[in-house]
Image 1: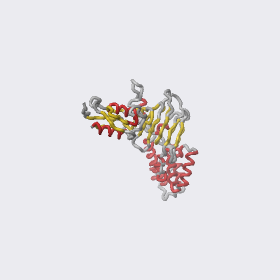
Image 2: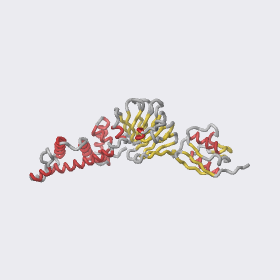
Image 3: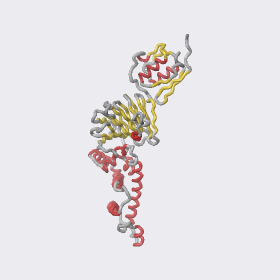
Image 4: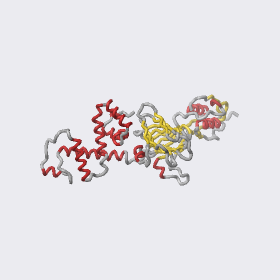
Length: 380
């Protein structure tokens, strides 16, 4: 859960849940922040400052006109009332040098407040460049949606299950949120994720399901998979548990391949595969998961017990059982047989035993297992 008790004014102003309370309050945000201030009364000054800053910068979209300037001066005077009186009034000549066109002569306190406001404007432009001008972030995607969205946030310490209207679900981890329409319109089911969620998607070939998360799109028809897109992390991770998914940068949606119609650079993931996406460089890579799970038990060589079995058959059994691709030189290893009870050893431990037995080595490249060796001497 967010450690709001340690937040500064700027961190509060950058926080989406805090901004939602200030800009579009609802029962959930009102209750949360009311309880927070009761539990942390020492943060009241910081929270008031962050609210005032957001209120001020929400009106500063462009250089202020004279009317906007007058309103700004009025707001400054109102917000500075009670903080003391100016200790010196400038003479007419000095005041004229500081006068804004169309505005009354400011006093020194107003000038100081104006400086503070200008600093706030500069900070707002920095914040705007980090959030608003990045349309592939969660905030940018949600704000650019042309349909009304529901947002669910997990502010608890336990996983939270959210069900969509088509029967699909996502299990949100703490400090995660998802935005989605009440009813999926058109030909796609689109949701937006920030944080970590495990999706189980109801199969519908006519209406693919897309998850958008920090620059990466995950497209499925019906499957289960995990997406981790933490706001402050430097990469997005997608792990497939069942079925198949396609992953690609969101920007590739506007660059379909002529021959297939699919987004350029898309990777297809199958069970026990994962993809890593780096938003800053748009680099997308595929790997096997650290501990591939058994997808289905072998029909032959049950319990992975092999008796003088050709290694080609051993590898085929592993491929079908774990959904992995094993690449090797069949001619070089054609004389290699295996006698070993591999049982419930993890996949990579099984491969260790096999390679030690036949005098080979293996490495994992782009979600494939590549086996190399000099072959085995024939006993004939």
